Amino acid sequence: MTARTFATIDDLQAGLLDASYLADRGLASVLFLALKLEKPLLLEGEAGVGKTEAAKAMARVLPARLIRLQCYEGLDVAHAVYEWNYSRQLLHIRAAQEGTVSEEELFGPEFLIRRPLLEAIETDEPVVLLIDEIDRADDEFEAFLLEVLSDFQITVPEIGTIQAKRRPVVILTSNRTRELHDALKRRALFHWIDHPSLEREVEIVRLRVPGVPERLALQAAAFVQGLRRLDLEKPPGVAETIDWAQALAALGSHELDPDLVESTLGSVLKHHEDLQAVRDAALADLLEEARVAAG
Image 1 (cartoon, helix red, strand yellow):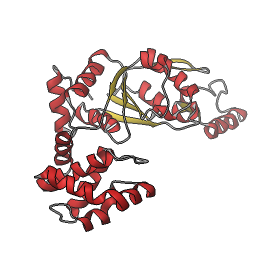
Image 2 (cartoon, rainbow, N blue to C red):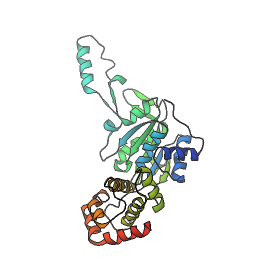
Image 3 (tube, helix red, strand yellow):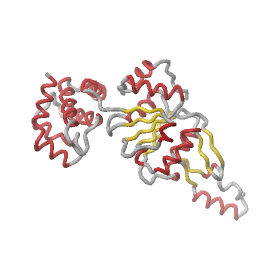
């Protein structure tokens, strides 16, 4: 498979739009540079602003295989890079004892179980490697990534250093639950994705929810923008706006009303305390603001 190339930022931006992702000029520019310079890209921003979707859209537009490593506390080499296939090694040992095979290659490549990082390094097909929520991983794993992001290689002590056959497009995301180390940041381009303006959020809703009524899209986006100004435990992201618009459209709605908002608010807010706070004090005002925004 041959990956598509883009001559300009505008070409890439148009390609992403065709792949149902509305990237602003800044994001399109840094994605273009990541491709041209073959450098990893670190995307930071609040949850739900489209960081993970940007990587998925890049995989669609290139096109390339998406390999995703979801980070979490305690993530280790066995789950991220490789581990040995112990059951297969045991069978090999038994065969060696019977004299049918040699025991010398017990730690050869054929006994490796390839996890996302090694799989992305070894393959010769176009790949977008998504290292999702790197801020959730431990410092030790972040330090391990330095070799991968610097030289696009992985060292397996029993085998040696495995060099990338073809450099993957690497996109790291972070919700900034902790500060990443400078050594990691130096190896990557950086871009902060913020919540979009009202106009842009409406455009995103139209793109991701085909056929959504115009007035409903504007009111839903304006209502969510109002929610973000409140002191909530978990402010909604663009992903929640899209989910809510899909739910409202599925119900055949053309505009917001109090009963509709009350019954579907769980598509936008995922914390009980946030739901209660909005229902008790802010719902009527937010609904009125959304209606005014829609004209």
